[in-house]
Amino acid sequence: MSYQQLTEGKRYQLSVLLAQGSPATAIAQAVKVHRSTVYRELKRNSSREAYDPGEAHQQAMRRRTGAAKYRLPERGVRYVELTLSWRWSPEQISGVGKLIGLPVSHEWIYRHVAANRACGGKLYKALRQGHKRYRRGANSKRSVIPDPRSIDERPSIVDTRERFGDWEVDTVLGKHGSGALVTLAERKSRLYLVRKVAAKRASDVRDAIIDMLKPYAAHVHTITGNRR
Image (cartoon, rainbow, N blue to C red; front, side, top):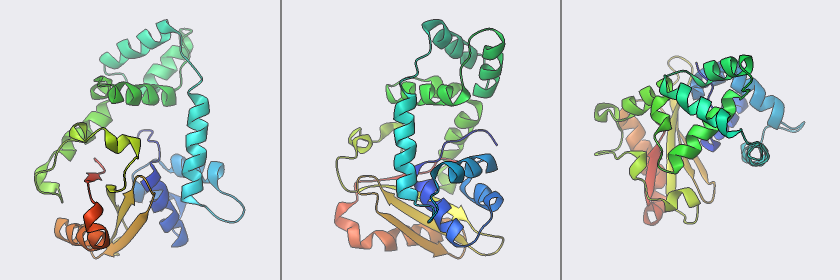
């Protein structure tokens, strides 16, 4: 499984699974990241008391802000964007870059692609695994939401976190035969809701989402699903 940064929602899922006593390898499979990502997350963001997903996310954002001060020379940026157009993975680009005197981390490449997409760029389409997940996410047969729309059509105000009512939904499979967790995270307040369902069926997930959002029915503007 390729490198993937933890979102705030996945950090809350990780916290729930930790509380259930799940090992790191099982957590990694459940939240769809590499096990090294889970180990790194716990090493970086756990305190002696416990793992606090809200504080862990804030720490990660502070580190990312600090990392943003790192700037790649223009020729390095051109190298990254050229090799992305050749469908090289960020890991391949990083490895070859070190050999030719253009060192760049694969984490920087993923951040660069994300920033480019936020500005309307199309570099993300060159990410082989990421683009595959994007295309799969458009499959209406597997969607819980009728007539879903691409995240590219989501109002820009959602990214500012200025209003209450923009939700992110995700699901986490439990151990074999033990059902699944449906999670909802409100972007502004970081309110986090969790509901266990018998299976990851579209109808079960839909009903859980509706039930959890009933108290907030007047404050639901958007619901964004995790694209896999």
